[in-house]
Length: 221
Image 1 (cartoon, rainbow, N blue to C red):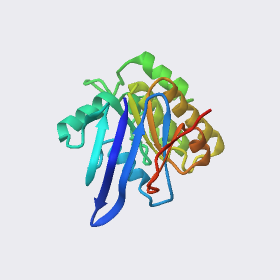
Image 2 (image 1 turned 90 degrees about the vertical axis):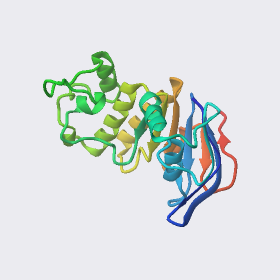
Image 3 (image 1 turned 45 degrees about the vertical axis):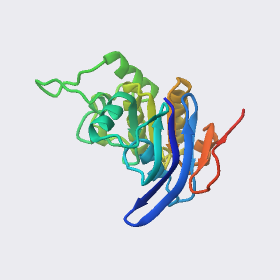
């Protein structure tokens, strides 16, 4: 799915966060939203994911204007097409690794249900195989980041919105997360990343400098 911002501006509490931002995020290639701290990278990511409204301009999904989507339409969009990996990971520490991935339990107890084959694949791809029964609160920060990605892999979402995925990670976990995101894009998904990490930026094919008033750059290889 193609996600586009067309000349959007955001004003929050009387403060202009950014003005006139335009970017086109395409499937099969990772898009990096880059810029200095406070430039509005995360805000732009949230606007593209319909988490925040824009003050001016339009958000398009596959050329359809979704700027004025109501709450029900946004929820359907998130349910059917989207996975988010945000800075707080969205992990429930008191639940098992498996539940955090499938988000499903039996109505008769705490037994995790869902597609076992997809669950196993998501665990294997993220290096969490054999830990499905462990409480998520026992995981390290890097492991929780990979758990959030395992949830996205399990859902097999069309679009993945990711905020600072390598922040505070060691080199090993950084490389693993970048590999997982790259694989997601290679499989034809739309991956949009807000980041200041040079290694993450180098792995992305479209670079958009937030607040620069310049066009996005598509890298050639």
